[in-house]
Amino acid sequence: MSDPLSILTRVHRARLLQLWRSAGWPSHDVVELDLLAAGLLGRLTGPDGRDTLRLTDAGITWLADARRRSRRADTPHDRLGTRVAAMLQASGRIVWRELSLRAVADAAAPPASPVPLWDELAGAEPAARSVWRIARPDVFSVRQTTVEDYLHPIVHEVKVSRADLLSDLRHAAKRQSYQWLCCECHYVFPADIAEPQEIPEGFGVWLLHGGIDSGRLELARPARHAACRLPFSVWMALARAAPEPAPDGDPQGHLGDPGPA
Image (cartoon, rainbow, N blue to C red; front, side, top):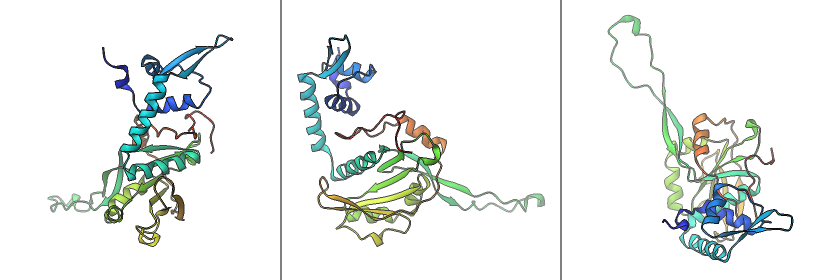
């Protein structure tokens, strides 16, 4: 029989954190079923006959170990991305990381074609075809709303070294693909690796003053806003991906919960 702990993911870790900080009301979903089967949760029946959930000693130990492992494994880039995600969640946004989205990078000129054999084809010009590429934004977020026009999708690109930032800035098609996916695109990096004016116009700039884990994030330049309606293919990619779990003490509501428009 397989070890029930082997199937646990960071979704289970996020649920344990949520239950640790809450009254323990059950959701009766498969995540809780996995945690109960692994012995990390226990059921308590109150005088009124209602069940609540509590972390067992094994659950507390597993959660603490998972948090220590995560902190050791995270790179500076991951840690700064986590801070950006938490900042966006605190403002009422739903956040995804490590997405792979198909985006238009540029409109290519039509390929050269031979001279047609018939005069009636001479005036026909092939339409320009869009160039598609896979965009992998570091942090992608939308407002938690029930009105599509208020979604306001935003991309945040995280850089922790000057070499990485300059490498990104050399690829115009990459930047165009980010802009195609959102209303605003921002770069986030430590204040000592570049100046805001080095970033192309139209992109927002967030500067980190101090250490990655405790430094202050400052909006040095707002991004230019452009209307954007997410295509169906992006919605399908978001549906297949899991949003970023809520940070400690800052729960992100479920999709059906009321939130800021």
